[in-house]
Amino acid sequence: MSATALAAAVPTRAPANAARQLFTLVLLLMGLWLLHLNLRVAPEAVILALWIGATLLIGYGGFRRHRLRRAAFLRGYLDAESPWSERLRGGPLMALHHLLVGALLGGLLVLALARIQTPAVWAILVAGALALVLLEAAFARLIAGHAHPRLAPELARRGALWITGGGLTLALLVLALRGWYPDLSGASLEQVIWFMVEHEGARSAVLEIGLQLAAAQDGLRLWLGQQWLPPGAQPLPVLVAWSLLLIEQAFLAAGFLLLANGLFPPRDPGDDPAQP
Image 1 (cartoon, rainbow, N blue to C red):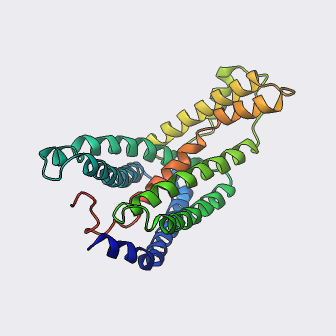
Image 2 (spheres, rainbow, N blue to C red; image 1 turned 180 degrees about the horizontal axis):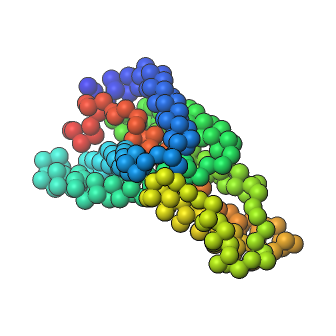
Image 3 (cartoon, rainbow, N blue to C red; image 1 turned 90 degrees about the horizontal axis):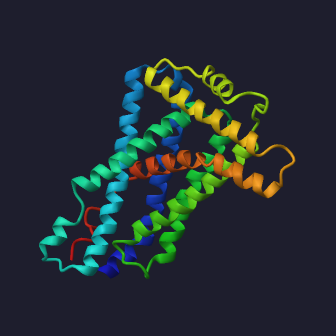
């Protein structure tokens, strides 16, 4: 298929692609909500299976998109007949890198799902899912006729993920800043950590350990924040400092978006930018 024909086919495929992505995100959000309700009573095998599944999906989506970008880079600098084009296109090391990232974000996502305490988080995730689909469709229309047709979907996806991720992180951060936290100013750090940890429990030993570690770092952050930023401090420094202390909200946003990216249908087999 020529570049002109590919460019002409993009607008006709956009509504179908957006509909598939939206359907995928609806199923993903329903599944995450059901997991949120049952994670603390799930057995060990289920927790490990969820972690492995999230790792593979996040790793697969990142690996697939990384190879597209690498192929575009190599196409601009290396001859298609060069053996280095095959050697540098991405293999086990690239896959291992994305599996490690997937394992980290997948584990943090499972913990975050078990720790969601307000329905407003789900409203933000729903809005983020809708924004991701709409932004990708908008970017695809904007760059049609400008970007290489075989690389335009990756550019549109990349822009949509970054903007949606930033918006999700900001919204979750604002929600966390407006939340209620106990007054820990009169307690020692050890008392605060034990207070936070003793309220966490789960059927799975792995999940329980993760929840207790997360609760311990919550106690550390809150204690430090209330010791360093007492009431009456200047508003702007307080806002900046608490934003840094609550920046973990980015992990939930990144895990959700990269999990969705791994679930989205792959590109057409013929749209390989490595092909001359």
